[in-house]
Length: 598
Ligand code: FEO
Ligand code: CA
Ligand code: CA
Ligand code: CA
Image (tube, rainbow, N blue to C red; front, side):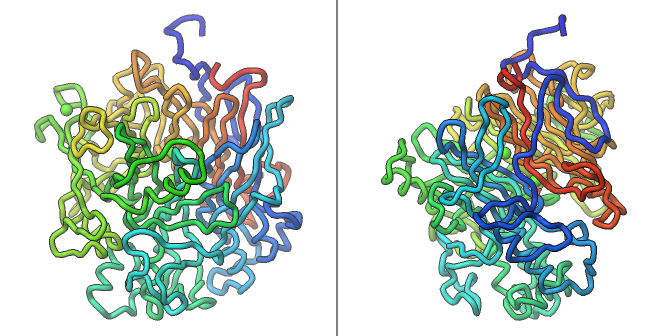
């Protein structure tokens, strides 16, 4: 530096240039290490990972595949409990002898074990600054697809959730496709069940037209599933167990401090392709969970609890707070632009008032046993939330991923990853809130609720970032000088540091470089001065960022997953180098002797 304005607190680092390296690249002066990799031990007695001799018994004790979100809660000085999502398996990268037409039972059971959640104690070494996972007998847990989860809230026990294996409709084995999540103010972790539809087979054999239409709206269609699990367990066969799919697509809460408690699926937060959920405590003490449904032309939601959060960490307070997400009101967002429609031409050119902005309102869908949607019972609203939101005219968004309030000021941010179908024949075209047709690079939205009250039903919104190449006229960086910012494409996960700076990770960079992690302040003269903090190895997605004052954690998901690559032809050897297979991992980045961004 030496000239230009002083960087905001916590953002004093030299931006990393876009690249295509098979490496994690942090800013100059920073160090990196691996916290835990796919296959590393989680539970006592876990065998050492052996890529060529994997077993389901071993995988059930090891760190799962494709870690996505990770969330930390404090355990003791320099130690935390880390909860990691294992979003999905890619069998062609896990096995050299995988035949997609004929998976073996062992391979399928390894995949069941490699999904779900891990809870792992991590410790920071004060001398070196690195962070490492520990095999902790008391706290460490795996929650694979064979582990029990309970169902809570308004549709627990509903007929729509009952199956042959679970006539109670209250006990589900496993969680699926857990993407992003959030840490609650009461010290639990929320995780979103996203693209659960891909695991189910034979929707085409379902004859009831109502059931069929519901399934279609959730992407449940066609014959055999990609992974062929239906050959090994009837629950993946919709022709035999049509309700099993209704037991996925929820927000799950897990209490890492209580290793023997079953994680809970919260039906009051609706069922869709949940990216994640992030909670803000409103001024009156009620809690508000913000959520996105990650699909092209789907919606942004919020849930407002009926009861208030109790402060403190007492047993009673924790017990009370863990029930907050079981009762409340579920809303969906409708956004209106303030510029004339004629000024929104689909190219991303700013309207004459200089901003993509406007107002919005929250449309209530259901509260407890009350439905606000004509023609749908509350039970139906919760289980088929997408259909309810369709009926009330919610705004179709460009793939809403992470939606996260800034803990400093309660303003809310949403990553809209992309939507190349926007404006295509037969599809909705650009509007002020989703202002580009064929939106390849996505945008980041900001809003503040009426009078700063997060329970309010109206708000003002504006776009903070319209992503892409800053040299291109269809991009916008909060009004900041575009010659000074890093290019960004496909924003996915969001996080805030202790100063309230916004951190954004990307999935699927359409500018031809590797994905990465970026940061900007959202206030003052430096608003929109986006800088790249790191890049991840070739083929990887940057997930689950955690930014503390001493270190940054990123989930490096699917390294080496590029077209034409597989386990017999790896495109990455990260993190172990040589001719090793790539392994999804959680990485730590720190600056020796300094805080992050100082
Ligand atoms: Fe799993 Fe929406 O990304
Ligand atoms: Ca405007
Ligand atoms: Ca994601
Ligand atoms: Ca987040």
